Amino acid sequence: MPANPPRSLWLRKVLFAALLLLICILLIHWITQENKPWIVPPEYKSLKNPLTPSESNLHVARQIYADECAQCHGDRGKGDGPEARSHYPLPADLTDPKLLANTPDGEVFYQITEGRRPMPSFKRRLTNDQRWQLVLLVRSFSQQPVASGNAPAALSQPETADKKE
Image (tube, rainbow, N blue to C red; front, side, top):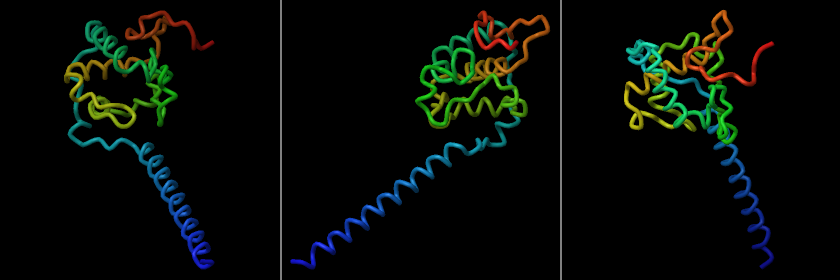
C-alpha cells in the first residue's frame, strides 16, 4: 500500500498542472480573439450608404439606438452605458473622431450587421434600411459641433456634462 499514495499524489499534481495550463491557454485565446481587428469582406468595404442624413432617418435611428445600443454604448455613444462595464471588450466610444475617420460606411454597416462578441448581430433583428440609419447616427456622434457651439443634429438633446472648457 505505501506505493499508491506517492503515485496518486503525483497524478493529482500532473492533472492540476494540466488544468492550470488549459485555463491559461483558454484565457489567452479569449483575450487575443476579442482584440483582433474586424475582418470586413471587400464587398462591404465599397458599399455607400444609400440613405441621406435627414432628420427623419436620424429620428428613426435614435429610437433604434435607444432600444438596441444605448445600454452598452451609452445615450451619447461614449461607450458608457449602464451595461458597458460588464462586457469585454468594452463598447467602443463612438464619439471619437479617429475611430471612424478612415472607416467606410460599408464597414460600419458590416459591423452592425454581423456583430462580434459581446455585440450581437443585427442581421435578423433590423432591416437593411434600419442598419443604414444607424450608420448615419453613429457617424453623427463623432462629428464636430458646428461653429455656433451647437451639438450635431443627431445629438439634439441638451448636453449636460462632458463640455469642453
